[in-house]
Image (tube, rainbow, N blue to C red; front, side):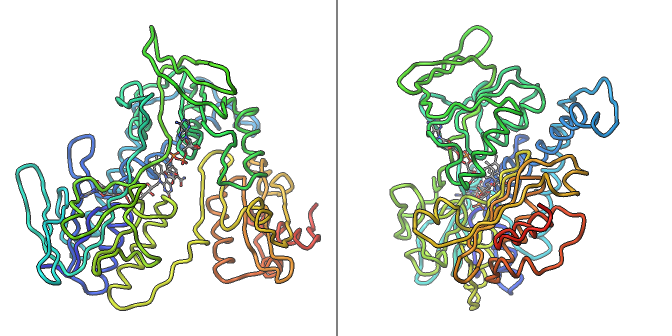
Length: 473
Ligand code: FAD
Ligand code: NAD
């Protein structure tokens, strides 16, 4: 009998299990993930086929891009630079192995019992929830007073492009293409489309993104999205077809023919590989939620309140399987908060301060409201922007595209949103998150000393620009 059983060992589940164990609970975590070698592998989507392997390939491919196209500017001449795909993939797999084994180590260190198998409810006995972990023929009964469901999400499928992970790939297949395809198509110009499209474009593929919506990156600030689209299409030669509805994908001699309708006209492209990245859906298959009186909502999510409590006292759900952005850091912080709440603490997570990052080059990152959202709600605000092109560190790096934009309330000067397109935006956005979490004003940032020369000075200058007093422009 455990105090807590966590179902799902991704970033939401494993962090919840570790935090609960730190707080003195007797914890078990049931996880079903098996890697390509058929071995149990903790860490969920994020560590196995998501955040971590994609960032490894983004870094490797960016290094290749720098070596081929950017080193010459620094006076470094190279010749015969080649992509060694097996080594690049092996490096990525090694990072994944190290981090997934790291989770197993954390479970041992914190005395979390790790059970491999598919977790499901078998019923309840008074206040005790009865579960089973099913691994082939082996069924292990597990019971606990509290249960956290962190079963994550899976790629959304579309009938026109059934994934076989040979030619038509989901995110797992997109991370394991054995040789650089000459022509790559991606259905969906969202986060995965842009990140994986960037990887394979840098390595030499001709990349076309086919996006159903008329707008590019609708969740981002419009100014950032516009500038990013220009850079991706004009400078990086990624073709982005907006308002394009894929009707069929057929195998043809030497590749795949992707047919789509765009602006009332039928078009098609031929590609060697096709990635399908049209969003993800919550995953609850096999959980037998009905055995404890739970049901998913119309979109398949487990309904929860702001504290991740489900309709059944003692059962919690978090991460991708519940409402909110499907981001690893959101899942992790919900995991911490739920473990602390179960043990009597009163944690609070501000969903308005969850940062978003897209790891393209330049990177895109933001936190808080976009300018179009402020306009739509009639907010009275001031905006301050500053370009990386006027920053010494960015010039030294040779990464001068993009800008930082800060949006602040006109009356109180409180920061309402920060939008970054530029080098290391993923790192820079944290200053914005801290600022917003502490209710900082743009003047607070303007008065803080930022190291020189640093990219963070662009954030500083954008804060000064809110009040019309940027110094270096
Ligand atoms: P998951 O990580 O999906 O883990 C769920 C786990 O539960 C899995 O191991 C699954 O096997 C297991 N499971 C499911 N059902 C059962 C069951 N019945 N019994 C036992 N186990 C079960 N997010 C970011 O923040 N930054 C990024 O850079 C980023 N990059 C990404 C790149 C890609 C290609 C993809 C696909 C996603 C990326 N994400 C990123 C999103 C991120 O991976 C998810 O938001 C995150 O993994 C969600 O964590 P989770 O714990 O809710 O679920
Ligand atoms: P997404 O929601 O980011 O993008 C999907 C895109 O596909 C959207 O632009 C959508 O309009 C489009 N689309 C939907 N149906 C379509 C169709 N039939 N034809 C053409 N286009 C269609 O989803 P994703 O890129 O699949 O990624 C899934 C999720 O994983 C993300 O939303 C994010 O939460 C997470 N993720 C995060 C990161 C990161 O944080 N850097 C990286 C990768 C993935």
